[in-house]
Amino acid sequence: MPKARLKKLSARKEMKRLRGPNEADAAKKDSSFLQLLDTHQRMMQSFFLHQEALLQRNFRLAHRRLIQYERRIRKHIQEEERWLMPVYARAGNVSGGQPQLFIGEHRRIEEFIDRLKALLQKERGRERSASRHAIEILYQEAMFRWLLEHHDEREKQILYPTLDRVTSKKERNVILKKCSFFAKHSNRV
Ligand SMILES: [Fe+2]
Ligand SMILES: [Fe+2]
Image 1 (tube, protein in one colour):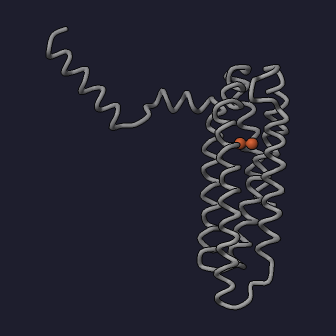
Image 2: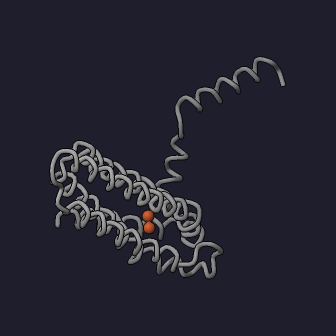
Image 3: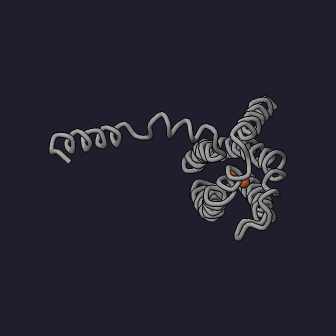
């Protein structure tokens, strides 16, 4: 290949790298269940707001923010179980991705949040014990985050790509629209 052409090609490659994901990539993600990973990220930001309040030992605010986070994640779980899991059943037996694994993790996430809420409402005492109380909750939350990351990874590697495989683009768009419609309206509650 002539040198000039090679140079042009590598320049184009570099531009692409600097620009990040191109429009085609974005469009591809648009009609993929993988776009639900953005929902996971948004929920995580909401959880971090709760942890920031916790670090400041503002337990009342931390509790309020945990409830906001809980509302979001429960809606997401509801969407997955109501709209995604029935379609996922088409894939049959998926190794490491049996429906009960996802559903079991959902229940563990919900139970964990209930425990965190109960911990947050416990008597906080004086300044020093308030710090200890915050440390104890953060310790529990480190385990909670491990559970979330594990669940996120299982959905990223198995659930969402499998759903992409067993659906048409049109069907994906219909389901994804239903999920966001449901999320938008239930946020008003
Ligand atoms: Fe999810
Ligand atoms: Fe999930």
